[in-house]
Image 1: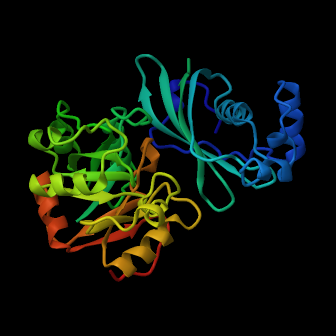
Image 2: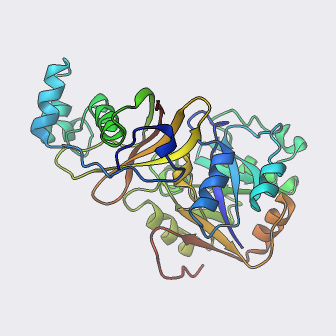
Length: 136
Length: 216
């Protein structure tokens, strides 16, 4: 269901799950575009030499996926903030899932808070956070 | 009685959950949870009174602390004003054995949490520092655990004769009630919780990853 107004939103409802593109080639392209042309975003072996489990998805790309997920669910939403806590790297070429759920609704101010969790293929939380969005 | 013994609210620097939203979430989702304990980082929240929320939602809401030591993070249940004078809750290198001793002297219980985690877990430091004295309970199920962290905790609890608790370590609303601790007796106050922990009559439960009973 696409959300068109604040009255469509219910506490506890799940946003449609979102599968981010975590291919190494995509991460590498994005990193180069934003000027982060570092081995940790381009090459699994080079990343391992830096002590990482593998090449990682840039954090701001993960944040972009979170915004995309919200807009897929509520195209009219004005995303006022995305607040993320990076607990562990999002490793490229591993399938991840983004889960979003509504955890607060302020109908007077037309604000909705969403919990966001990025999980890897083992179901481990890599990134969590909240988004505050305004829905007319 | 099932309590989530490790949760954070917006009072913690990395917490994003409002306590009322935890309550709403538990009730809206019909979760099998009778209450939760707020364990804010490096502090004890002396000011907040959640009794009205507890009554409104029919949940037990208790307050504790998560302090930091040279062995990693430690939950302290039964914090009093006097205990807060014994050591600096905001300091990140409190000696674990002192925290345990001071807690016991003031009728509180100290429990190393996520002990299998690199850097902030107790067993990341035992090879270098040795097995600390005084530990009786550790957190064996933590909702934020990755890889083999919980298994490391369980294996060491069995080896060293520790009891085990469970807690979600939730920082956002929807992460509450992933792990919890089941008690045989009713718990309404922090004194009840401390007494129950001291008796050892409890069982750690991982709610989102069903498991065989852990014999500790």
